[in-house]
Image (cartoon, rainbow, N blue to C red; front, side, top):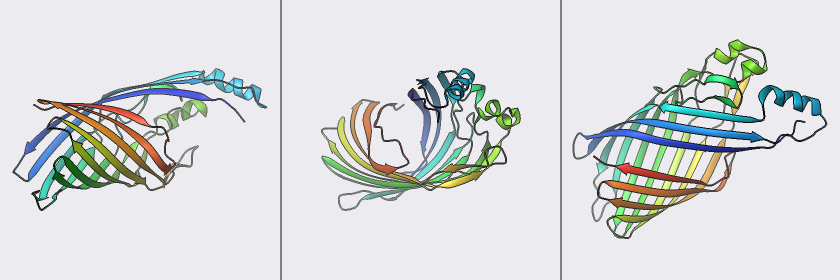
Length: 275
């Protein structure tokens, strides 16, 4: 019955370095490597309970504040896109693609002090295959876009629960790596965009995301890690500005409904420069 409300403030900046090569008028390939900068600060407020001594003992061991950081190059993504149907006045454009994400980024936590103080990994630690399809139609000043993708994991190895070795006096668990395979993830998005001119556009996107539930078996104090079945339906307004080769996108994702997902809206800024 430990009651300890906490607040968390986090910042995550991702700067992808991408190179795209047009093999033909219909086929292009892309390589992308992100640099990730992450900071998270957690603060606790301990409240008296009927297990006061247990509460005090726990937080004497782990402290009442935590800082998690993570900097470095993430996972490398390689992708290809092929235009099946060229868009014209009477037809919608159809593009199919396939991406593979390789576990090149640091996948294990380091500098572990406790549950809330360690250096976070910047990679996922597994290989992912992501087939996708995009359908687009422009009827100026409007454009309509529909896309869907499915993320399939080929699995990987990494450490789980970095603080467990300290909590259970089992250093081996902290360094032990386990094979895992994330559940499949489906993404569907549909958007209607209004182009004020050639440089400014306003977008409205409705997105649906679903991730299957899965249990990852572990031979440890934790017998298993349960990933619950989850889904979310979100609305995202967007404003896009472009000046020559510089493009600035500002968007806010607002969850409308869902299950086992965060309910907080999020704001994102994306700055692009084309060489």
